[in-house]
Image (tube, rainbow, N blue to C red; front, side, top):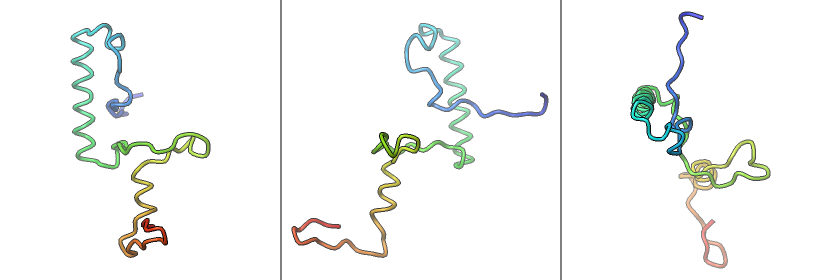
Length: 93
């Protein structure tokens, strides 16, 4: 099909082992480096294309198909409009 475009691969798709780079083949490593630089430049211009980089807090059970990240926990627990209130045992809520 002509006239279609595709995104460069993300860092999640890059090889993570020496064998994944065809034993450190210079052309393969250079190709991946260039592709990842293109992706990074594209994500800087269009942030909606970037993948979340927040650490995963929970990934089992209820969160198996949609892992819970640190950013999501922070968004639900800290609200700027409500200051933290100490509990009876001194811990903040």
